[in-house]
Length: 203
Image (cartoon, rainbow, N blue to C red; front, side, top):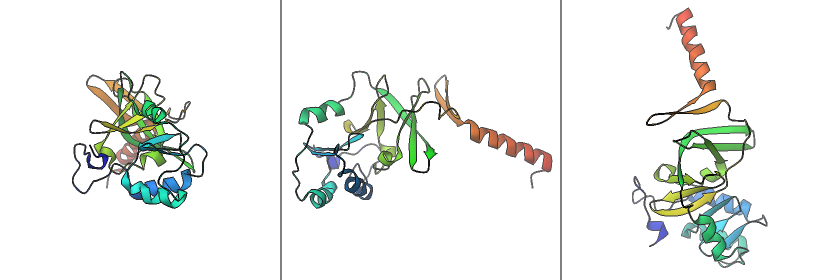
């Protein structure tokens, strides 16, 4: 099966690839300078994210390496092991919320709909997805990896960013039938605005 022809629900013929060509090109040009970068055996990685190889990546690989078959520090078995789902994968949902701990960092927040537990990944890696709404996301019990699935195939795996109490202002409240997400900061702001309108009159 050709990976560039795999479509998840909601895809159409204009969406031929899983990953965004422009964002991936920029990422490769920056990441290939790191010792942890690897390309080969149908995969590409910088040790924090691992993606399936797609044809649109080849011109950039050729540009930075001068060949489409550079030496790869990782074995096929290492790639396959990392890309394999755990025996009991846990589905996580993209909250569409982002956390910016500092001007140089941007984290995408996911959560487990059964427990409300948060999982965050570097926003740079989330941006590599061309159509994130078409994918499903899974983690394992320790939440130390997040797998990306397109249809019935794993197309990527990302190492989450560990936080301490930085997300104490964000809660995912578990209730029967699912999870209700809300941000306490926004909630307080909405209440303050409603109170002001009540006092001053809503014009």
